[in-house]
Length: 362
Ligand code: IPM
Ligand code: MG
Image 1 (cartoon, rainbow, N blue to C red):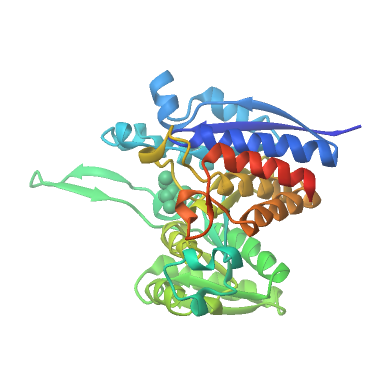
Image 2 (tube, protein in one colour):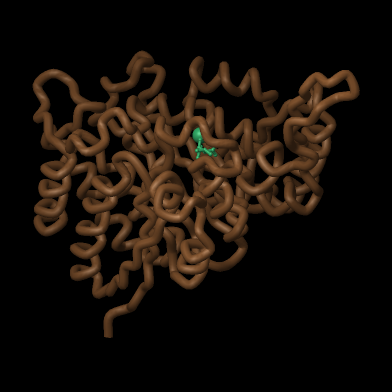
């Protein structure tokens, strides 16, 4: 009998529904090939949820996610909701989902595909062979630390406050994921902090260093975040696995993404200690091209592959999707964001169709 999975789809805003439609077709196709049966259920998040219910993450959506085997998310946000107070913005929906499912570990791979080497703004010899995994802490740090808010001081002046805080156990659990990840890759882990200035980073460095004793096969190094940002664009090949806190990981993962030429290619996985993970592209909702059939669906499709690999333990089906993506790029199919001279410019739907055909052929 086919293995059954209940998948919650969160298309969100902007290009979300266009790229999600492609990923769903791809999942159905690999499902047939690998005897997996997906039951898809859709829920609201972000701006779409605000418009329909007044809240960026309705309780019904979180509940549906909790009762599924994995969650596939597209993207949230748009100009329309940018002026709302922070707890009612689409981003609050995403943060609520991460917190609600306790998804403390965010895996963001940035791998240069030989077919796209010319899409990078960096010189080919700098980026050729880059293969980095950013392990970002996702439910702590300055995103969630308290106190937070905008308060009035005694003089009547306003003061904005956020707090960067990590407990030992929060550092240990993300550190463990990072060491385990590095062990399965090239055995190198770089921990990024700001321990020359921040106490929270001193504790971070201390705990990560202690954990290293359990992983003698992993070579650990430490960098300050400013230096890490510089090294990422100067000599990115020195990195294998990077572990860092929520805010530094947000920033460095965008920088790492751009090494590959297009943020439109990169998937991510957000995982907890148990329960369903959330799999989503690193890119945003691209409201400027929404509804125009121009979006690159490949990061969404690769997120579905990560879902199969890390969420559902179906590595063969994941491999098959990743192989098909490489094959369509190999024959020159491109969306606008990764277009280069001599290649075939396709829209989102045509890219999806090509991918489906390739899934059958390979
Ligand atoms: C990301 C995004 C989010 C973040 C936003 C949309 C809340 O930038 O996933 O990197 O800051 O974590
Ligand atoms: Mg970000």
